[in-house]
Length: 359
Image 1 (cartoon, helix red, strand yellow):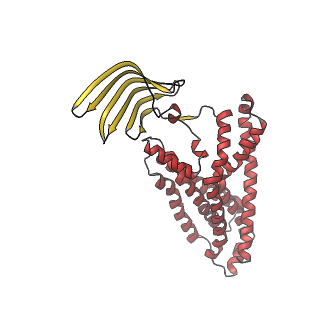
Image 2: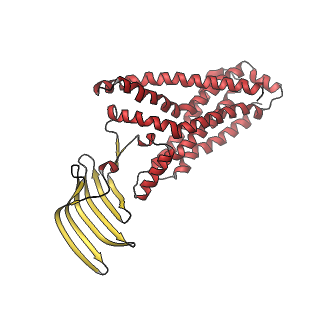
Image 3: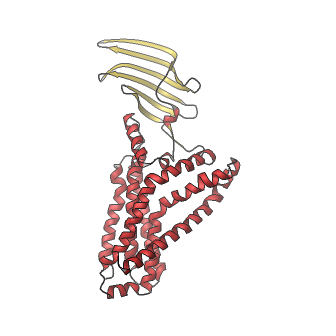
């Protein structure tokens, strides 16, 4: 690294970490008044508020906003350099525009690597305490529940079906259990209703009919009530909205694998989270280069205009990313493609802005 690289890297990192500190303080100042009533109502201990919640809240909010911090930081100090004619002086010294991008790219990659490690391994471990605190004292009823057309494998050769599930009383309508041997159906139970008995940890089956199939022979059995022990519980059907935030990436892989093996649906958002954690780190590099290309041109209005343009591009990126994530989580677009589409498109925007930049 020469003097130019060290100069830009110092400006970038100092501005970036100052922005992180400032926004962290602002985030806590906004979040605390919003949740203080819940803290008081549920008598949350002060020690837990500080060390379980806010100590882990700050890294979490930074993990979400680091790409935006990178964009704002780059625009801010590069715009000042352009206003002071430092960029023009650098070009007059024989430095090419592509050469100027090198210290920005170095910082972007450095921060992206830190962000990747944090969002995949460190932040989820901290979120375990934060989310447990939120689920206990703040969001007590934020369940994402499977409640229609539920298919599950409860054993390698046993499959259940529930037409509808009611979490309020842990009951289901139109229940069926199928057992297979060598790929052939040998047993099928159909019932009008099934209720989970918490004390006995069994499902009480009501108004049932059982078919037993042995070769070309079938036998029928019916009854009013029976108890059935199954390897599925209400907690398997009731899932916290913020569960994925508490899982490291290896844990997410294992979770998605387990859900697939059980034949469970509604795991697309967890699969998308795996790919999104890599994509959002790469976003930091993209927004770094966008901020540089926008702010390196000296123009009337200075930093204010640069910030408006840069933040508008960042907002457009976030909007487009949210738009594609909806289709990804519903299974309309494969998760890996869905989360990377915004990065692919805005990588093209980066090259366009670089080729059109003042040189």
